[in-house]
Amino acid sequence: MSAPAIALELQELQRLTQKGKPSKRGLEAAVRAFTHLARELPAVWDELPEDLRRMLVDLAYGIAEPPELPFLQGFLGKVYAVWMILTGRTREIATLYEAGMEFADVVLALSERESAELQEALGERLKELTKEKREGLLSYEAFADRVLDR
Amino acid sequence: MSWIVEVLPEVVEDDLPAIEKSFKKALKSKRAAERAVQAAKEEIVARVGQLRSGPNQPQATPEPRPANAPDLALWKIRFRFKISELPQGTVNFCRVMYAVAEDIRTIVVIFVYTHAEYSTRPDDRELRRRLVAAHRRARKGRS
Image (cartoon, rainbow over all chains, first blue to last red; front, side, top):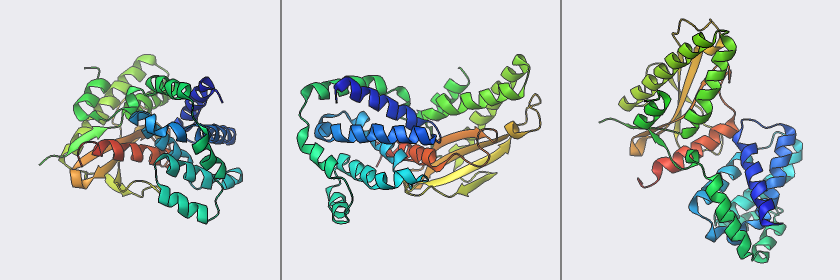
C-alpha cells in the first residue's frame, strides 16, 4: 500500500467517523479503511506525532462499539486488538490472543513495515489532517468571542 | 470557587451551524432566521456561562453515559428558546450536554443541539467520541 493511498484512507476514515451514524455502506468503508491502516501503522507508531496518535485512538473508539450490524461481528475483536497494539497495551493483546481472537495478520504487520518514506508521508499528512478542532478545548471566553463574532 | 468551563471546538464548528440550518429551514424569511440565530447564540453562550457556578444548574439532569466511555459525569440542560421569530416546534427545544470532571473542577461542553437535529440525544458513537476528546484534553497538563 503506497503512502498516498494510506493518506487517502486516513482522510476517508476520518470523514466517515466524524459524522453521526453512518450508513451500512459507510460503516463497511470505515472497516475497510481501518483494516488497511491497521496493517500499515503499527510499525511507525512510535514515530508518529502525538496529535495523530490521539486522532487514531479517537477513530478506534468511534468504531469499536458493540456492532448493530451482523457484518461487523467478526471485525470487532480485530479493531480492539489494533487499538490495543497502537496504544501499547500488550497485556490485553496477550489476553485477546489467548481468547482466540483474529489479529494474527495485524501482529504480522508489526514486523513487516519499514518504509521511511511512509513515515515521512504520514507526518506531512498529519499536518493537514490535524485541524484546530482536534488540538484542544476552547475556553469559555474564546467560545463566546467566536460564537458572538466579537 | 468557580469552575473551569471549556467547550469542544466541534460545538462551534459542527453543532451551531446545524442549528442555524434548522432555523433557516423553519423560517422562510432570511432576515428572521438571522435574527433568530443571533438570539439563539446569545442564549446558548449565556447558558454555558452559567456553568461557571457549577454543573448542577436549573433544568439540568444527569444523563447515562454511553458504554465504554471515559469516567466523566454527563449532564444535559434542556430549555426552550424564547425567540419570537421561531415557530412553536422542535427547533424551540435546545439541549446543552456537558461532561464534568469533578476532581479538577472542570466542565466541558460537548454538544449543543435542538430537538430538530436529535429528538432525544446524539447517538452513542458520537457521544463517546466527544467524551474521549473532552476527557483527554481537559486533563492535559492538569492531572
